[in-house]
Each structure stands twice: as structure tokens, then as C-alpha cells.
Image (cartoon, rainbow, N blue to C red; front, side, top):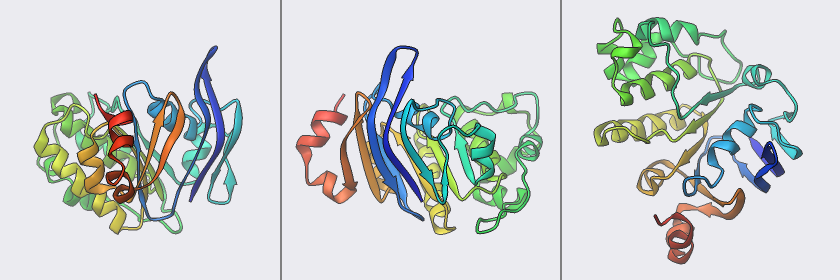
Length: 233
């Protein structure tokens, strides 16, 4: 569903992604793993065209998307949940969801508020609370729910387990498994290997913006030298 082929992305003169290539099969959950500063968030932003790769190709379904404005990438069916969450703090939970609403999209689940409140019971209990009254984990849930209101077929999740309570991490894992069962394709950026192992079919490890591993979690677990070299603190 997503094919990344030899992309090179920069911040000014800083060369962040280096000939990065990997694919995300339709209906699968792929974990993008690596240490802090490895280039995971830049990869997400490059896919979404918030950072435009200088060279290389990104194919999303039938569309070559390098050079498209981010809103056009979103209209093709890609949803993006940034690490910094960015909820509207003065709007209620229900109002935040309304902001994300998009028309139904062929081949994708059409999400409603009630479906999302069933998926995120914490949000159902707080539907009339303002965003600033939510915990960090609840804000993360709200950002995912708001993204789903756009009826994406593919979702980018940047560090969904970062800085949230263990009970919320467990709930987040169940949500990702549910999204997969609904037919969504997911690419999630993670440092938490245990969380990735609970939800992902495949893993990509990057180091200094280059791919050093691509394969199943079973294959990764069989190569502790790779895990220790690139994922250890």
C-alpha cells in the first residue's frame, strides 16, 4: 500500500534520511523502530509531505505523492497522528471530533462519533470535557479518534505509547489491533519494543536515517545482535 524508495530528506543542510527504502503491505501493522534521533519522526513527516524529500520516490496506492501538498495526501486516504498530539484544548472532546470529520471514502471505514466512543471508552466518559482537561494519554486517544473521523485507509502513528500511563498503553495496543481488524493499514513509530511486538506484523529499524533491518518480529527476535545494537538504550 505504501512504497518508499531511496528517499533523502534534509533539515536545511542536515542530511536526516539517507536512501531510506521500505514498504508497508495493505492491511498490516508495521513498526518503525530506532533510537531517539534515528529519523523516525522525519520519516513520518516525509511520507506526509510535511518534509519534502529531496530525492527518491514514495508511492501510496496508485499515487506518487512526493511533491503533493499535505492536504492532498490526506485526501488520498492517509491519516497522520503526530507525536505532539495537537488537540484543540479549548474545544470539547466531541467538538474536536467534529473538526476531523470528512465525507465517506470508498474502501475505508466510515467512522462515527459513537463508533469512536465505543473504541475509546475514556473519551465517551469525557465527551463534554475540554481538551485541556484530559490527561496526556486521553489527549493521545483523542488525536487518534479525530484522525479516524477523516475515514483514512492508512494511518501514521508517531510514538503512540510515548509518555502515557501503562494502562493507556495497553488500551492503545487493543485499539491498533482493532484498527487492523477493520482493514486499516498502520505505520507506527516506536521506541517501545514490547509495545511494537504486541501489535506489529513487520518491523523496520532505522539508524542515522538509513534502514538496517526489515522483516517480521519473529525474525527480529531471532537476531538479538540487531536488537541490541540498534534498539538498546
